[in-house]
Image (tube, rainbow over all chains, first blue to last red):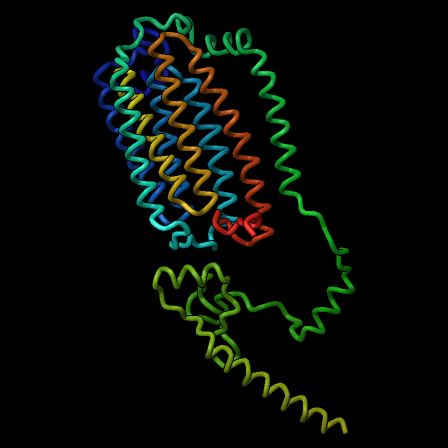
Length: 282
Length: 99
């Protein structure tokens, strides 16, 4: 059956897929695609949205293969699911994970009216297409008679050769534009190694921040490290992870109040010790 | 399945994408909804190509994919620049021209 789908590039209606297979596959994939799309616009987390979009795109890829477009099916998987969606995930990881979406409506009743407008658009389009009497597929896909890939290549490099050439200019422009937009101009001179070292000594904390999980019960990234007196320090846990723990209702083990008290105690001890040493020197 | 069923599915996906653009506040998710709309258009193009028995629709869908890839690259770069300046990806926070 897999071979049937992938090689569906000739025969009646542009596909040699068994009609029964076609029906079953269509309904499975249609349910998958629509529920994936609905989940995409309703789910809160941006990463989950991206994964739902991947589900929709992969089911559409199989549909292309079923409709006699195996080349487009592969392009869909490689370009959309492989490149575009991974780019989305990169950007979500860079900026989207910590920025929780606010549920406050800037325009009052916007969600309600957007839903109504969506239903209206759906009714309009479905009624319009329902009246159009689309009919059945053409009996023989003449351009597909040899091979889908050959047919598409012939069209791209003859009829559509100028749009194809313009596409290359578009892609180069987009790559350059992305580089220019994502480039960050340095406004201050780069600090030298001497300046970095001096700043570190002057800040009072010479050693790096404690990593999470040090001397804790579990060695996990959401486990705050322990200070010498046994209390935990919240500064050892990334703020994004701490926020996630709070959102998920997990035990926020990094209690800031106890941390501050512990650090204060350590600071007092250090001062006392320094004073004692000072007296010894005298 | 007849091409009409695929066209109806494309319409439903397009409407879902349009509603997503209207209700989401995060600019990345709005971009994702736009991608869903473009995918729905591609499905309609491929279905019409099968309906007419030629490959022009498939070639147009191919061009739509190329343009969508370029659009995503530039759009996400702009989003990164806005995030750097305003520390937020919400479309409500980009209102500098308002006052």
